[in-house]
Image (tube, rainbow, N blue to C red; front, side):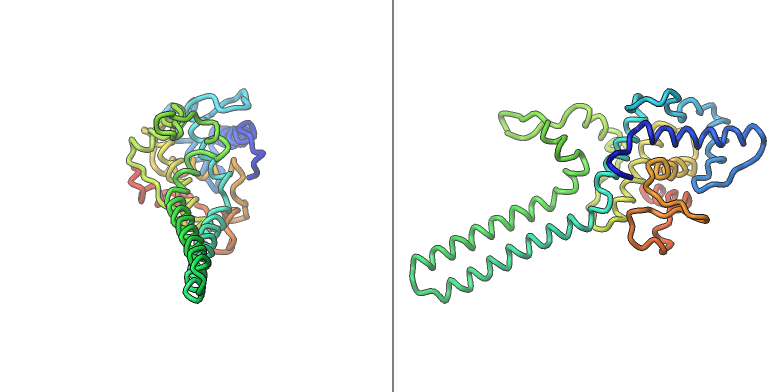
Length: 271
């Protein structure tokens, strides 16, 4: 998916998938696809929930309902950070290693210098480098939590508490995150690109479970896979779909299936 993906385009694909299965459901036929849409459609139909899961037949430009807003917020976050996890972690490691190396060099050279003022200058530089390295290490500890919550551009728009000089988390952000805190969801550090996928799947599953408490976890997993398809995060092949951002697309571990997604949701204690 590119940054140009709009909710309207996402919604158009979502509606097309449900319309496809609506036609086959009425005729008694079943279409086999990667998100097992025929099973999902049948379950929503039998429980009278089709009106809730078919987003917006009017194809609005922006999400309207809370469910749409929650889902598309996760889609936008994933799209913003896809393929960047390994690179950002590498940048932090390089910065820390570089400062550590320079710090050691200045301390070593200080001991070889006889002029007191130069010795003091080198020690001062080493102290400065150490302080910068420690600051970056602390930033690394909270980096993913901060950047996953909101984009840097949006964060800059937040108000400042004049007493603490800290940014104030807007009400709409608190409301978005409340659903995850209520379900016991906790953030884990991102190390590999697949960690971002696990986060995306679990958070989507948490949202969908909150809004569709009456459907099976299998169908929640089906909708998670459908989100990948509608956001064009996957490459659809003849027998499988593959997560587009992962380098080794030949590996079965990088194939996206309903069963594998279901297992991730179960592992996150979703039922």
